Image (cartoon, rainbow, N blue to C red; front, side, top):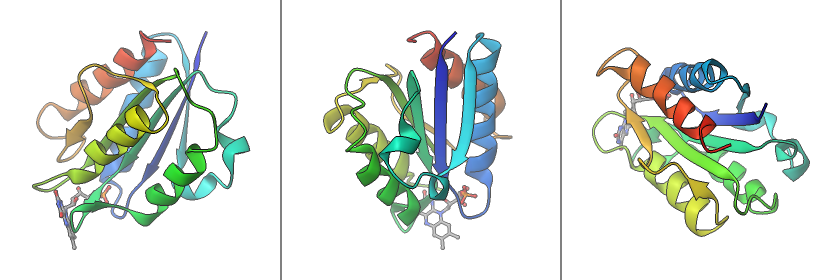
Length: 144
Ligand SMILES: Cc1cc2nc3c(=O)[nH]c(=O)nc-3n(C[C@H](O)[C@H](O)[C@H](O)COP(=O)(O)O)c2cc1C
């Protein structure tokens, strides 16, 4: 059984719902998932011991939330090369955050990323969000 860490930043909790559904998808696929807010990760040791990673943030003013920017600097020191990864986030109209996180995981950490790209949802409960978020978790689980 593999273990996935899902870390996210949110302001009004839409991204929390997406993170929890991704975790459900990982568990349905028979693996373990831990869900944490970005502020809970203090240093690279907190990122160790997992087989796959999902990082997420909502988009505000065209950017990810500051807590996720800090997490990405911590993750740079965590030796994630070759590990399966995905990125996600709630958005309103442009949704830059998920793509920026995804690109950082792929190009800076050299992780093996989910082939469908970043998961962007307006909320976990619209646009087939529930199924899409669970499927995203299953897709990562299949790479473990
Ligand atoms: C002040 C403000 C600025 C925002 N800026 C953007 C933006 O630049 N692009 C975008 O796609 N959504 C933007 N949004 C919409 C949020 O991303 C959206 O409400 C999202 O569901 C919030 O996720 P959260 O609940 O996880 O914080 C903005 C929302 C607010 C309140």
